[in-house]
Image 1 (cartoon, rainbow, N blue to C red):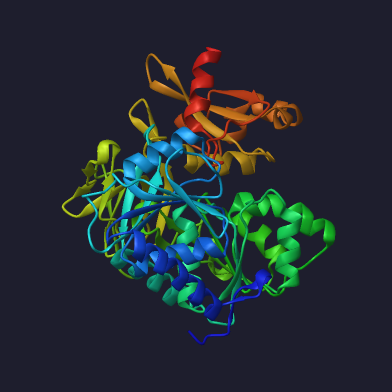
Image 2: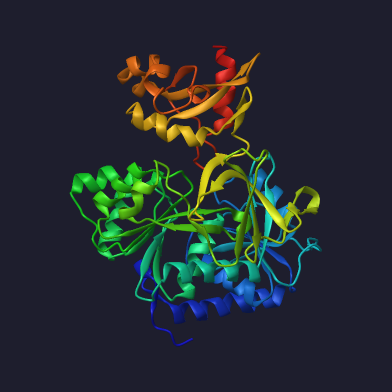
Length: 474
């Protein structure tokens, strides 16, 4: 109540102001909602976004996040699926009864009540995963508390630390960063536009002396040319966290050119685990121990991991996790629940292995791997090797083409610009990759695309790429 420390840096918004505004929303929810009612929030980052999350928790309500940019039909589906009692948005979308509160439209769906919700449930985070319809991941106060405490202990945050958050506001990574910051009384800046305006983000980092950044490899690639142009060394940064993409030695050295004083942490996680699973603290002196791919480290406190191999001789297998950070259930279509547990172990859908130092290595998604004859090939394992040794600049993807004898054969997909510059080396793949990859892992041919297809979440759409490969009938 009496904490004058700044919460939102660029708005000079303090923790005590946040408390008072949260009480305002709490009183509103108390008047109109029962405990365990669901609130659907479709907002970009703002003070109200923060207030609503905490007011809902204080009133015993559950929050589900909906992408503000999603089409109306998707919003309707998620409201119906979660059985949200209230829907909060900036826009006038529905003909249902609504109130205007702090310039927000608050819609009432009086018939909605989710009987599947339990007392300790806090969030329903929708994720598409590998299915066409979103699944609601039900997270509890216990799972989230376990995870943000484990993150805080491992990274040793201080109340003097400050950060900038640009993960989409409906992602699990958004609430995780916010709650971890607030647990440690840190200050932060919220950015709703993602990385559309990287120059503006860089200016804020410099102006407010931000010292902690969650910066994926793709975000770094967008920021790097601007930093290079300004000839700016970001000496204030003490910690860089990166996840979501496979990290290589080359990536580490690129980060270090700009953030020369920063500790780099490569992390791994999934929405179902609230969301972080493991951290790897990069030690430059020990980089030689790793061939090229950087591990995602050891599990955080409260998380257990198990690798299930198909055969004893397989180097890698399916990654299963267990522990105190796991979701309670999936909320599926028609308000059904479905656990994805086997003896309390959750199948992440990823494949990897654990080395002698107990570090986890990710090889890719189980859905993306395929068999070449009797061998199993993981595209994400070989893509960095191909990119490095053929000196390609843009992203490379290894897809699959149906083969009558081998079942599948690997195909390399690259940008047209890279193809034009490296035509010779790409035409002689076997010769140029023979010293780096075993024969079955070397792509049989190359496809050049003007643009790599992307998913709604900005990731390269491997499914679409494989469809393109089949249609080309090469």
